Length: 93
Image 1 (cartoon, rainbow, N blue to C red):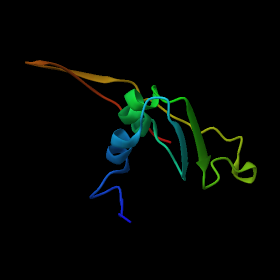
Image 2: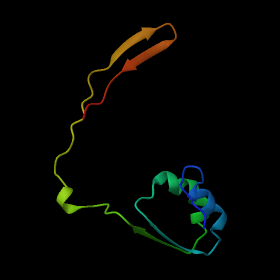
Image 3: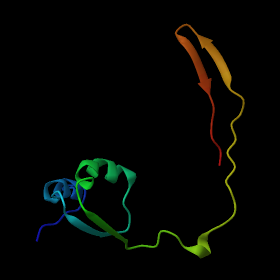
Protein backbone atom coordinates (compact mmCIF):
# COMPACT_ATOMS: atom_id res chain seq x y z
CA UNK A 1 0.00 0.00 0.00
CA UNK A 2 1.24 3.49 -0.83
CA UNK A 3 0.69 6.58 1.29
CA UNK A 4 -0.82 9.60 -0.43
CA UNK A 5 -0.51 12.47 2.04
CA UNK A 6 -1.52 15.19 -0.46
CA UNK A 7 1.67 17.08 0.43
CA UNK A 8 4.57 15.03 -0.89
CA UNK A 9 2.36 12.97 -3.15
CA UNK A 10 -0.86 14.45 -4.52
CA UNK A 11 -4.07 12.49 -4.90
CA UNK A 12 -4.96 14.56 -7.96
CA UNK A 13 -1.85 13.37 -9.79
CA UNK A 14 -2.78 9.74 -9.15
CA UNK A 15 -6.38 10.36 -10.20
CA UNK A 16 -5.27 11.97 -13.46
CA UNK A 17 -3.37 8.81 -14.34
CA UNK A 18 -6.02 6.37 -13.10
CA UNK A 19 -9.25 7.91 -14.45
CA UNK A 20 -10.23 6.36 -17.76
CA UNK A 21 -12.96 7.55 -20.17
CA UNK A 22 -16.30 5.94 -19.28
CA UNK A 23 -15.20 5.20 -15.71
CA UNK A 24 -17.47 5.23 -12.67
CA UNK A 25 -15.72 7.11 -9.88
CA UNK A 26 -16.60 6.94 -6.18
CA UNK A 27 -14.93 9.31 -3.72
CA UNK A 28 -15.42 9.59 0.05
CA UNK A 29 -13.81 12.69 1.54
CA UNK A 30 -14.55 15.57 3.89
CA UNK A 31 -14.33 18.14 1.09
CA UNK A 32 -13.77 18.65 -2.62
CA UNK A 33 -12.81 22.16 -3.62
CA UNK A 34 -13.50 24.03 -6.82
CA UNK A 35 -9.74 24.11 -7.29
CA UNK A 36 -9.62 20.32 -7.18
CA UNK A 37 -12.44 20.16 -9.71
CA UNK A 38 -10.64 22.60 -12.01
CA UNK A 39 -7.42 20.57 -11.77
CA UNK A 40 -9.30 17.37 -12.69
CA UNK A 41 -11.88 18.90 -15.04
CA UNK A 42 -10.58 17.30 -18.24
CA UNK A 43 -10.55 13.84 -16.66
CA UNK A 44 -13.92 14.24 -14.88
CA UNK A 45 -15.67 15.32 -18.08
CA UNK A 46 -14.81 11.94 -19.63
CA UNK A 47 -16.28 9.73 -16.89
CA UNK A 48 -19.79 8.30 -16.95
CA UNK A 49 -20.59 8.60 -13.26
CA UNK A 50 -19.29 10.29 -10.11
CA UNK A 51 -20.53 9.51 -6.60
CA UNK A 52 -19.17 11.78 -3.90
CA UNK A 53 -19.80 11.01 -0.24
CA UNK A 54 -18.99 13.76 2.25
CA UNK A 55 -17.44 12.14 5.32
CA UNK A 56 -18.05 15.26 7.45
CA UNK A 57 -21.31 17.18 7.63
CA UNK A 58 -21.32 20.12 5.25
CA UNK A 59 -24.59 21.59 6.50
CA UNK A 60 -25.67 21.41 10.13
CA UNK A 61 -29.08 22.97 10.77
CA UNK A 62 -28.28 23.82 14.39
CA UNK A 63 -25.34 25.97 13.27
CA UNK A 64 -27.31 28.06 10.78
CA UNK A 65 -27.95 31.66 11.73
CA UNK A 66 -29.92 34.34 9.99
CA UNK A 67 -27.22 36.90 10.70
CA UNK A 68 -25.62 38.41 7.65
CA UNK A 69 -22.15 39.85 8.25
CA UNK A 70 -21.81 43.56 7.58
CA UNK A 71 -19.31 44.66 5.00
CA UNK A 72 -18.48 48.33 4.86
CA UNK A 73 -16.58 50.14 2.16
CA UNK A 74 -15.41 53.56 3.27
CA UNK A 75 -15.22 56.27 0.62
CA UNK A 76 -12.35 55.85 -1.77
CA UNK A 77 -9.34 58.02 -1.09
CA UNK A 78 -7.80 58.61 -4.45
CA UNK A 79 -4.32 60.05 -4.60
CA UNK A 80 -2.74 61.03 -7.85
CA UNK A 81 0.80 59.85 -8.37
CA UNK A 82 3.26 60.42 -11.19
CA UNK A 83 2.64 56.90 -12.48
CA UNK A 84 -1.16 56.87 -12.05
CA UNK A 85 -3.76 56.59 -9.34
CA UNK A 86 -3.94 54.65 -6.09
CA UNK A 87 -7.17 53.69 -4.39
CA UNK A 88 -7.31 52.39 -0.83
CA UNK A 89 -10.22 50.60 0.83
CA UNK A 90 -10.74 47.91 3.43
CA UNK A 91 -13.37 45.28 4.17
CA UNK A 92 -14.62 44.92 7.71
CA UNK A 93 -16.80 42.04 8.80
